[in-house]
Image (cartoon, rainbow, N blue to C red; front, top):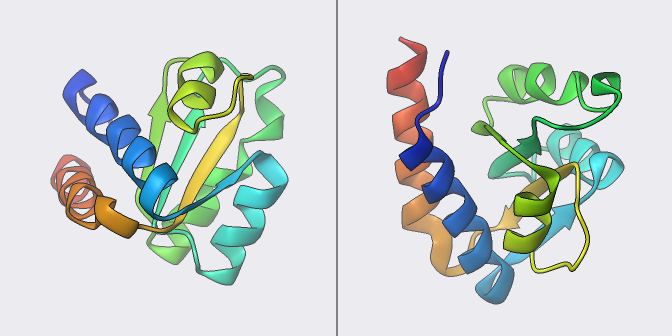
Length: 115
């Protein structure tokens, strides 16, 4: 399943909006916990994580829990949209805040791609 550039942009924007009006979890461990608890509304993982084993379990967990999941090109991009000045491997939106509509749209697009 190939995610479009527009969808990646929209997901990153949703993270930016949620950062200021909602709540995020950052880093592999925090994101994994949010998925397992079922509190994650949207999960983003960077493609350039090395070694990839660090985040390999996240897409599988998201699928099990029906949580929208988007892979973004770089850790730098992900860190920037999460509002932290350092690259990060994964980000989960746990409280959407004003990003609720954007997250819903991303989730809908992902469902259509999965068909």
